[in-house]
Image (cartoon, rainbow, N blue to C red; front, side, top):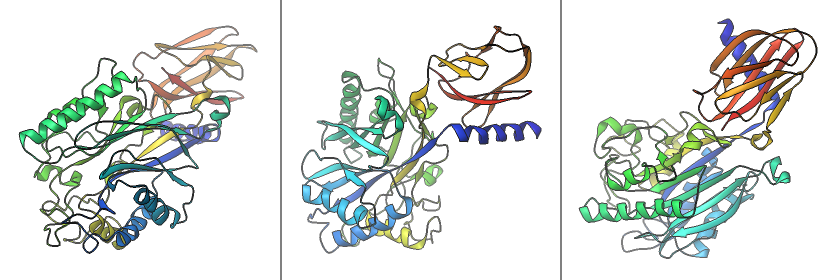
Length: 421
């Protein structure tokens, strides 16, 4: 108990010196937004109504990054969503990317108070283009030319469960991974979208979660790997369909029995190695309570969100959005080769060992603690240090990422952030 309280106290102290932020991410298949077809039209998929549903959904979750599939491929449509959803909801600071392709396209909207769009590229996948957006976090480090970057890859793979459909998805996934490899895209990467995969064993999914030669691969943040299709074991993670029938001809029917929609993340995000870290338990098929297997989103009654939000999710699309949160270490760029902690110097960043030197003064008895940013006490020792003495802490078993070092003694109470490369 005493140790738990001490760790808690240290974390509180650290909050005074280590600023942090959270980025909320939402990925959503909008079901023919502003696009009329023979089956989805102004009567059964009215865009004015959809704008209202989206205001309810995004207004409740408040994403900082909003990526979408099934947007009509026109400037008027992509701007319409920005104006009628975000600006109308009082979020005039939201901006959008440009769109690539025609007919149905992907799009990214973002909170420009927190983020900037550095670049945008696309991959010529079939049947739809895959978009690659690089965002940067607007931290104080921008003044020094330093910041944290995030690449968002938004894709919408081929639908269908035939061998030909699976091969189309596999080909597109390979094109995406080859693009990442050839363009030397590294670090914090999310790939998100309606991937239309039925099983984790599908070639497309396996391609995304298998390391390239340069070591890039994606991870499922909730690690729910398996045969998702029509399997009640994964009912809590199914994203399609919110409807049991398609009696108005637009949304797919069949109830919730597929996990088509994903946000996957690279290792640096999962481990917090480069300024961004996935927030544990923040991944959610938004509105999914686990009681929907082969049922609609609204029957039986769904209390996972307010009634109006659930109703808007039901009417907006036959897919549920997927959400997660990313913790931003806003002090990421301040790491130097050696960090001074009053009378102590610490090797920072570190690799196999953490080196601590006493710089002056008399002999001191201090307690050294290393704590993860999630509050886990990883190392503790009480030692006597003489001026000029070097103390080594083994760190070969520490994962890459950020840690807190606490040095406590008579007249000493210091907490410093350190990083393992």
